[in-house]
Image 1 (tube, rainbow, N blue to C red):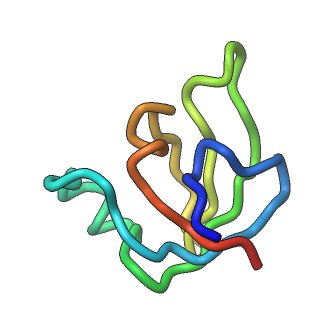
Image 2 (cartoon, rainbow, N blue to C red):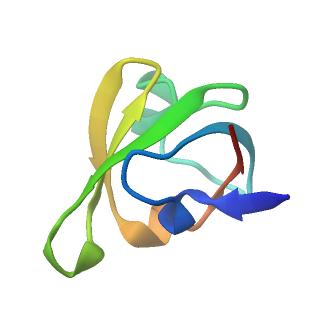
Length: 75
């Protein structure tokens, strides 16, 4: 079952399967946010926005709205 990154619990890992959005910011792609990559939710910021992620060893923070566009499968 596919869920989105913003639905992951802290410490939970998943594999990126596809994107809902037609355009993904180039910065995310350059940092490894591509289909088949492993993603882990490291931490929620206050009020749950932004989300702090580990994607294949690269740490980055993204807005919850963008995380809702990334569909993953839990490991």
